Length: 327
Figure 1 (spheres, rainbow, N blue to C red):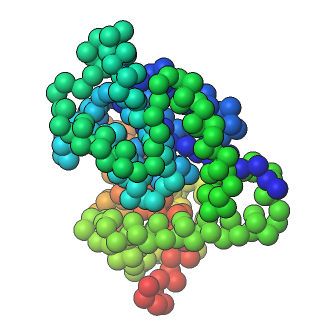
Figure 2 (cartoon, rainbow, N blue to C red):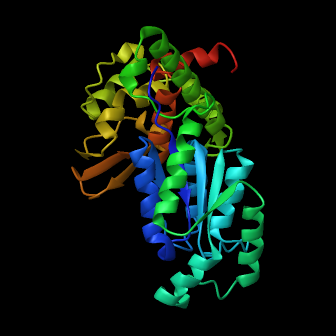
């Protein structure tokens, strides 16, 4: 049987419970599992809550260590981050339990460390939250040993729950059937992400499909294609006779202009006007004197188009198929 490592999310207020949180992390590690604590998030960071939610979602279980502080307030909800973490774990139906400091031990800690570890500003919110926590699965702690003992007792119980995914070393599951299934799911995931993105992403006001169709329907002659490829010294391997539209022309020169290319003016081919007009390419004339240099660069639109084509497993050389049927 493969040894799973569960990811355990540890929630607590920050400065007043550093030692206690460390004890919890040590217990999780001693049991052979993975602690996830939010040491790196600064209070009041408005993006922190979204990142915290992702960590909770990716964790297998949730442990709350509650001391005498309510914690930093999240501006929009008016609740502390700790309470929001606790509620989100409940919403996601994560296995959980809480460890609440005993009244006696809290009084002792205040005597030793001062009022900084006692809630003074949001006492009503703290008492209400503490009442909610104690109504559900919880235990009391009087020192770091209590925290370690409670976690070491709880983790074996969670480890027996088959619905908790956990983490398993990659080689343990690396058989052909599993790897093929993972590859299939990965492809499907990429396709779904690309479709979801296409619903909102636009290219000069057009959807991805509309923009690709427009470029595919803009013809380019073999002579025009040869002139542009030569102008940019493009080494894409594409033969001019295979470049029949603006999209394929952009593909043929993309590598040459992706990072920018400087060219001494020697008669710009007419087909470049199509690339400029559709927003795929931009130019900057460094000198307007005869023989002056011009910088050409693929625009942000051009770069996004290229990424989308690759992400959807649609090589530009096959984009002409869009003309045959609607997607």
